[in-house]
Image (spheres, rainbow, N blue to C red):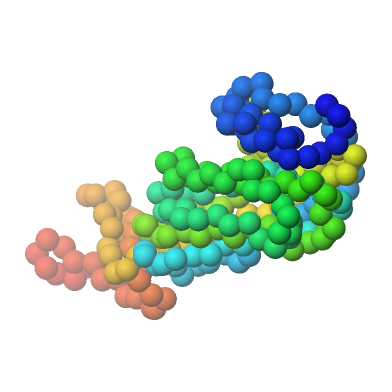
Length: 220
């Protein structure tokens, strides 16, 4: 209310953050919109040969910031495929930045990280944070930023004079291959004219599929 940002503002924000996440009224700030945009991206943007048990590091990069006081980032992932282990702030905000929130929810597949600085952050681009995951099952996981205002999971940043810039972002895709090659249930079964026979490969190789009837005679 005094027009200045200090450690007490961060403490109030931190105390109200949990209520905001649950859809409460929380703390409302007077902000101004901006036509300028901040870009958030993941590095790497895709991993297509991960295996169960692998440890994966995913960086969150920021660019286009200007005199930012920090922001909050909300990330979602597939908890059936990945388990988030740790989230660490990067060097973009500097050593003087406060880590206001650092929360992992592996049940719903969500990560919340909020950083704040008393003085404007001079760096326009850099490493915002690093996320570590363990691969727990084969399948696919899309990692993306969330902008859900109704659930108060809106990724946003606040700059000098309470300016809130637009945010452009991308997604990251992780594909996990099985540890062993497996043949899955065919469909339909029994079949008449055609049949879908799915399988998963542990490595990228050429395969030959041969079909036999119940008498052990090769059909195709």
